[in-house]
Amino acid sequence: MVLNKLKDQVNGNKALTERGKWVSLSFTFGIDNDDYLISIKNGKITQIQKRNLATESGIFAIRAAKSTWIEHWRCIPKRDFHDIWSMLPKQLITLDGNLLPLIQNLQFFKDLIASPRDGKD
Image (cartoon, rainbow, N blue to C red; front, side, top):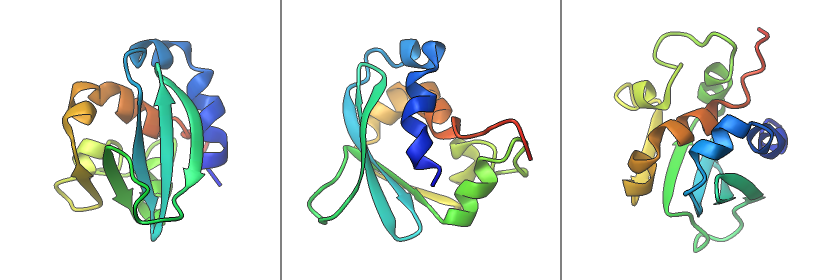
C-alpha cells in the first residue's frame, strides 16, 4: 500500500517538511471506502492510521477512488490527474471540512499527496 511509504517519503524530504513547518493537524485521506487519518506535526507525518470510527476525523477530508489515486501517483499522470486542484472540478476528488488550513498550506499538501510518485511508469 502506498500509504505505508508515505511517512518516510514526506519526512525524508527536507524541502517539503521545511515548507510545512507551521502545519500541525490531522486530516482524513480517503481511498475508495477506506479513510485514513494522517497526523502532521511541524510539517512531518507522525502517524497514519486507518479510521475505525465515524467520529474519528481530521480537520478536512480529501477522498477519491483508488484508480484516481493510482493515476495521480504515476510519474506522468494523465491530464486532470496531475494535481488535486485540477481533479476537483472534474469531480475526481471530494473535499470537505474546514478547508482553511488546506488553502493556507496548499503547496505543502499538494506535494505531500503527490509524494508517492516514484519517477517510474
